Structures are given as C-alpha cells and as structure tokens.
Image (tube, rainbow, N blue to C red; front, side, top):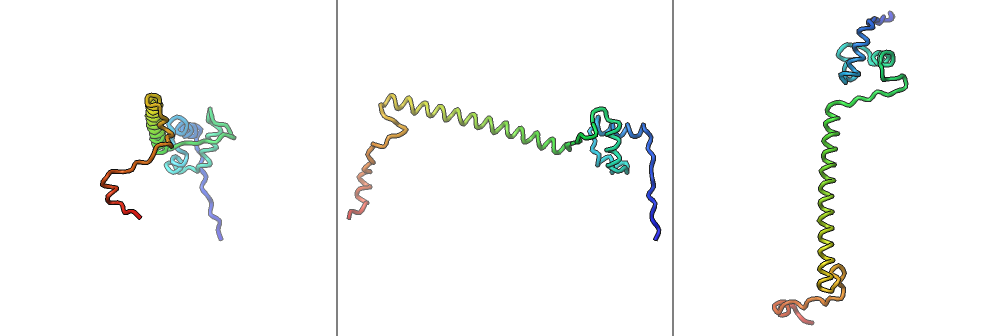
Length: 133
C-alpha cells in the first residue's frame, strides 16, 4: 500500500498577517476563513498566536455570530421591557395599598383584614328559593 503524501503549502508572512487582520479587525470567524481559503483552522490559530497584537497563547478566542448578537440584543430589550412592566405594576400595587390604608382610616375599619363582618343574609328572592330543612 502506498502512503498518500499530503500537499504542504507555504504561506507568505503578508498572507498570514492579512488572515489575522481579517479575524481581529473584520470579526471574521476562523471556521469561515478556513473554509473560504482552504486553510486548516489550527494553522489560522497558530498565526493568530504568532502575529496577533492582542491574543496570547493561553487566551481563548470567542467570536459571536451576528445572529447571536442580534438574539442577545433582542433578549436584553425584552428584559428591559419586562422590568419596566414590573415596575409599573409595583407602582399600581403601592397605590392601591395606600388607597386601602386611607379608606381604612376614613371608615375606621381595617379593610385588609375584616374578619368580624357578618355574612350577608341574601335577598328575599334567595331566601324564597332556598329549601329549609
């Protein structure tokens, strides 16, 4: 059996720096560049570690796709909207509680906890239609 020889490529330093620039400045993904230019992703990472001004050997490079960024922005907007709604509802609750407190003071009755009130007897029509034992 013959062993297949893999073709080796030599890339110029300018080409390497250009690829690093695409990743750093234009926010292109390594996988995208790898497929587009037929370069192994590991090779691009090596170039990044060698030529990057900001990335060091132990740093992890994380890129978000535009769709992920848009999804994140949409979620942040939704959170802000929900926080606004919760704040508005809390203001309504506070207002109603204050109204109950004022009503309790005016009537001299605790409207929140009024357990001593007798149940209503009902109307005359209710009494007529209710069977007695």
